[in-house]
View 1 (cartoon, rainbow, N blue to C red):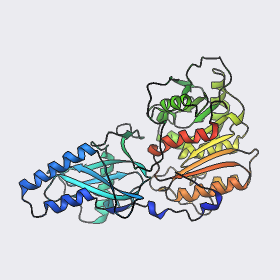
View 2 (spheres, helix red, strand yellow):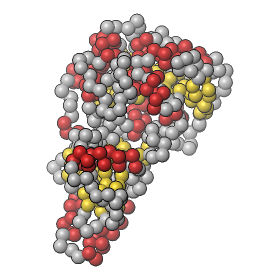
View 3 (cartoon, rainbow, N blue to C red):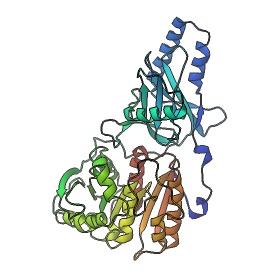
View 4 (cartoon, rainbow, N blue to C red):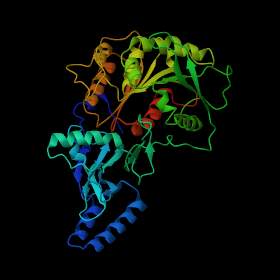
Length: 442
């Protein structure tokens, strides 16, 4: 992960992080060995290859001669006679307008399908795979093939040779995860059975229209009893259904507190409900900010001793949730003095319809950046992060960093080598909370 100062932001495009299609050493040796071999020999070579791959796990990660800062990452699929093609659905590793560029190749005469990418050695990401076994012939034209592959993505699933997975917004399908040797450590992401456990509860919070009543998850630290003890720092975290319903973020908080990286704190995390509700509520929506500040937090404070000082309150989110967090602090710095915004959807602006495809382009300065550039009522502490593979969102985040610094806010900013991805956000969310609230006493 790279922490940038203002003087190094411009021109930090990291071209060496771009994926380049290559053939890895093990697949190259297999391709050479099967050339001219008969069917029996090819089957034996493929079986030997799969035995090695199953032992190492997928994807295969191999060093590159002459490029110690990169690795070859080879994604694999074991096909059969009905397999027509296999598609890699990698998080921000492919051009969605040219999905054919993410098709795996078949080693001739075998059941081995492969795609190798040269990636910088600090990359972390998630991916899924989809195999087409339909009886239909492949479309002969590029547009028809693109449409066919786009339909195929709906059937993508985790890699059966990779035990590491991460939850996604598709409850029926997790994604597989890989992390190269120099990827930022995530020491608090895994569950530790040996540390004291906090409580995670789900409640129904009353709210006024248009938000209405909403389910919310509440995390309370180990040993905390209702109504007892000193007021706790509080984090308001968007997308509670993901973070506590699917990603087990309570385990991460337990580890952070046990290690003394964070003080005992409370987290209140409203559900996003569904895609339509999420779009209605998140972004620069004043009604939802009002719900967070004037209904959710007072409801929680009436049940548990929570800090009311904005300096001990964090609002956090990812993507549209990050946009919400930023806008909440912009509108209500009296309530939210700290912001943790990951991969913020700064392309959002008032009046946009729900995006049906690629995000709409931003002409000029993003809407929320112009508002922060005009100043806020109180100074804020802000932590931003964004993935190098997130396209225009990198430039938007850099512009926001500049605006915040110029107007006197305390801001830190990280760029990680990854995409728009919970596999990256999980560790970075923990790191960001430590930046804002770190230490055993806050």
